[in-house]
Image 1: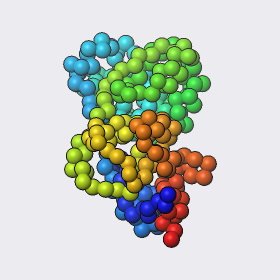
Image 2 (image 1 turned 90 degrees about the horizontal axis):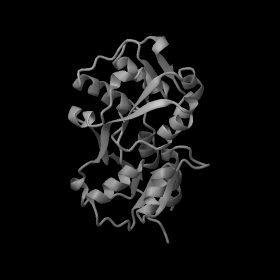
Image 3 (image 1 turned 180 degrees about the horizontal axis):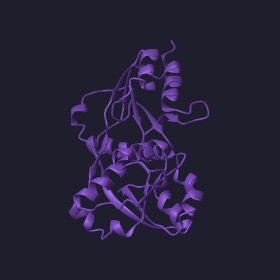
Length: 251
């Protein structure tokens, strides 16, 4: 079956803040129109909802941050529950970008901040040096099981604290809008698509998915995955899209 040319792409994420996004280069290079629209957004739990988990923040002496969202909601919750975070609190940030963001909330002192390369697994030796700590793990309602499992397997004392939730955005204004390619970065994006459009049929729409869990969600929804990334020839989503567009637009 001959695949239609690609002229329009909808990326299920917020528009990049930087002008240097590879998506803008892709639009120019391949002469395609790219729109951005978050299919999901984050909502903070109320102090009342958080208290129902019966977690005492101050009975922990270290916090593990796996994302900027987790950090924002941790400090928001401390404020909402009138908790003053002690200066001795240790912060374990899984990446440099997250550690840099921490400066928004604390006066940076090297002795309290520990930084990983990108994943929590990279921090094993650092975490082991603080084995005596009681760790707090602020997270969303859809935290990957692999993170608590990793902490459990290595016998760390930790508490999972849900401080925000991922909810589907209202996309009703897109009902009669057609795109050649829909780009997804998480299973939640697929869930949002069907929550907004239960009757959605793929037809000529190509589906692009980043990461194995997203690809699995595409398959589970009964959709055909046309563009997958990362793959051996394309480590990024924009590269995978570019290769696909060049192939189908070549006439």
